[in-house]
Length: 265
Image 1 (cartoon, rainbow, N blue to C red):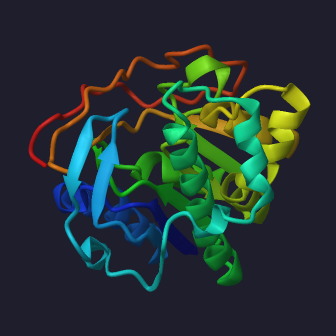
Image 2: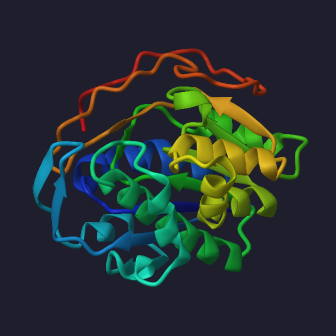
């Protein structure tokens, strides 16, 4: 069993989250199979995000904490400069913040695709997609083992909380099988068609649901919880009610609920 843990985006607060990543993501994967860390990050020295209220200097070279076997660092904006993805901005701004969040979403989706290509090239059986700026409160050991034992050749397992606007939580995921890994990881390829067909702005959670349904990927849920951590170590309060948001019909698999730990990063 070959497992890739794929990190993407920006490291942001990795020095605060690394302990939870090691204990609740990496250790469970290593207990099941051969595990490698693959990382695609954007080179940022400062952060200025009005939506999250963050503005300051980022810690340099945090990615080394993950000891990646594959790492690619990319300058932001370049991939958008002459891309058809620029047309997505014509469909509007779902967040109403002068397209800053939309720009961030496209960067995140591009980063996920880049690390996905590395995972597919190495022929991993399972990929755990994970943001490095999340404090993971629970171990993925149980849902990971459950997905790997599933009768489905391909499957995506998602958090059972924050399925906003009828979509699917896109913070982290367990993907088994090439079809599931491709669908989840390359969803930026369907982003422009999503906007064209609906005539609406791009929406992160709805795009994920659209892509998985279009590719007929079985979806299950896990109650693993994680909180966003800002660049200065501030923990974001999260809503962890199961299926909060308007979740469509989905095959439900629950772990016993445990109150999240919000300290000890």
